[in-house]
Amino acid sequence: MDIRRIAASFVYTLDAQEPIRNGFVEYDASDGRIVKVGECEPDEEVAQGAVVPGFVNSHCHIELSHLHRKFRKGTGMAGFIDQINALRDWAGSDVKARLTKEWMDKMWNDGVSAMADISNDDSSFNVKASHRLYTRTFLEVFGSEPEMCEGVMSDVMSLKEVADEAGIDAAPTPHSCYTMSPQLLSASAAAGLESGFLSYHSQESQEEEDLLINGSGAMYENRKRSGMSTPPVTGESSLKYFIGRLAAVKAAPYDEHILLVHNVCLSQDDIDAALKVMNNVYWALCPLSNIFIHNALPPVPLMRKNGLAITVGTDSLSSNDDLDMVKELVCLHTNFPEVPMNELLVWACLNGARFLSKESSLGSLTPGKTPGIVFVSDVDESGAFTAASRSERIA
Image 1 (cartoon, rainbow, N blue to C red):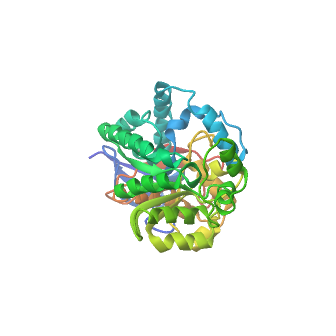
Image 2 (tube, rainbow, N blue to C red; image 1 turned 135 degrees about the vertical axis):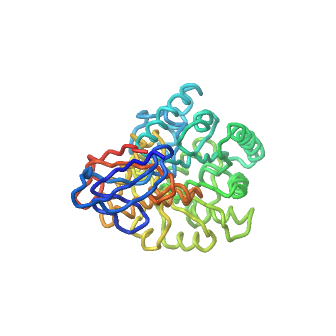
Image 3 (tube, one colour; image 1 turned 120 degrees about the horizontal axis):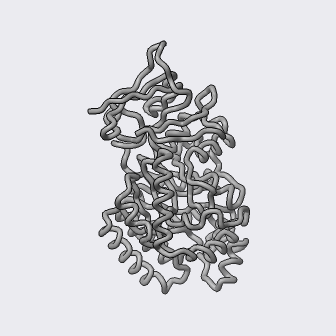
């Protein structure tokens, strides 16, 4: 064993509700395993900053890294979809693979230990298969016309075979209510549930809600102009519509790990509906992406009031200027200062690990675990991250 020690003004183990002030972490440098944590002796020198576990980026589209800084901000969801349709295929698989590696390397060095990632092709598979950053890949599908369902599902199952051959954890998952026929949404959800994990873009914008509730709004007009079918007008939220599509293929309750991503338009009624049928539901926040596209944020106070299992993601470089988990946490802390830093880190580390069923090794600075050890500079006097904070992997 090669035991090393790092001491800092704040150590967030996440095994407690408060950080250790002037604490230390001892770890085996050969494999990053945590050996011991505790308070420093009064005369021990400590680094001015915070030590935290490796982050878990619970929602990313790493294969879209070729779209970095190519999108206009503030276009709303319909405008964003138009941009991604126009630009997503400008790069070949070799360019996409190179940029995937560059950004995964950056995330690793910044302290991200695991990621729940969305893929629409195989351009990221070889990088993921050999990378130190653990990834569970959700093979996302689209198709607005009912007759497309069989072909789309055949294609995604072929893509899963490629993922299996590459040795990465992957399974189909639905994209969202507005890009899929009811039949495809149910079929892809069934495949995701079979794998035990499902990720779904849920209530990302008011345009999405207007589409389902009223059959109106910018997204509805966008779909119609494109000659695409739209989902049925239900008079209820898109999350309730999704729950209905799950019920079409499997009776509740659902014990599988389900990740609802974005949740900008989440209401108490929606929360009640989800918790009634989902026993392992997680709620991903991607605040900088939400601000980038439509200058909105999820109802964090409502989510906390209900004790939801919140996670944090970056989304993609088409809707974000970076894939920096610290910046996401600074955004949340700035907009919701009542949320303690320790709780934000539980969202960004431990809850993401729990969603991926990796909490036995990741998510907290617990002796015996190998979560990754990260130093964050320029924290304030309470240990909270600031706009100047930067993260660096120690182990």
